[in-house]
Amino acid sequence: MSLLAALPEIDKQADTVFVMHEKSERHFPFHKHTKGQLTYVEGGLAYLSVVDKTYVVPAMHYFWVPAGIGHILRIGPSATVMRSIFFYTDDDGADIFYSKIGIHPVNDLLAQMIKFSGRWKGHIQPEDNSFPFLQAIKNILPLICADTMPIVLPSTENERLQEIIAFMDSNLSGLLSLTAVGQRFNISERSLSRLFHSLLGVSYLQYVKTLRMAKSLSLITQNQHSLSEISYMVGYQSLSAFSNSFYQFTNFRPSDFVNRQKEYFDV
View (cartoon, rainbow, N blue to C red):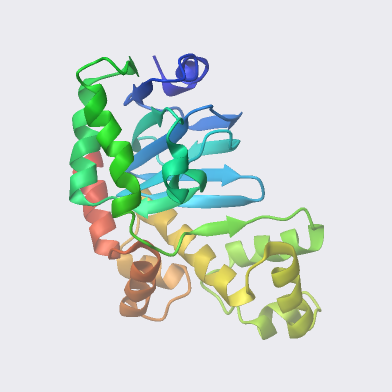
């Protein structure tokens, strides 16, 4: 059973843990669960969209979606490897972690525990011998969640800003200063800056940095360019500057991400 086909089954039993490690479709339409969702992106890239923003989730990271939060999930390259576990919610009040959407890097302990859970599938009952192990996975999440700068791309229905963002996305290798983009669209630097703050809730500079990271991750998964080429394609003047920015967002180096792709996709 694919994850898309399993969606109606996940919430049928409130007190269970539902385990799903099958290959995933490319796109999951808007949906929500009565269970909390832990999904580990083991290799590749995933996009989690919630309300007016999209989270870019790279390999070696997991996302947590609280119960009742509607979301859309898109998969990057077709070989993206994801492992999902859906948890009961009766103890969610024990920590604020369970009430917020989060994107976090996976440490070795959590990665091995999630992989080990791959021997089970479907509903795991509280009386099953495997239940305490899965329970332990949920319990340790607040203790080991590492802080990173999420790769979040806010969206807007404002047509003028949509046009500006589309231009930026298509010209990441060029000059994207407030002055240059403002002149391109006949808008003052101050007004352009205010547009980003008021409609997207982020600064212009932060949006550009995030857009570059999102694009670089997509390019890496395509396996068609070297890291040096990608760094220039997304607007960095040197590989070292790109690597430092990449690390700031993801907590690992671009070369680590490349090696992870090789490990799972045999490239």
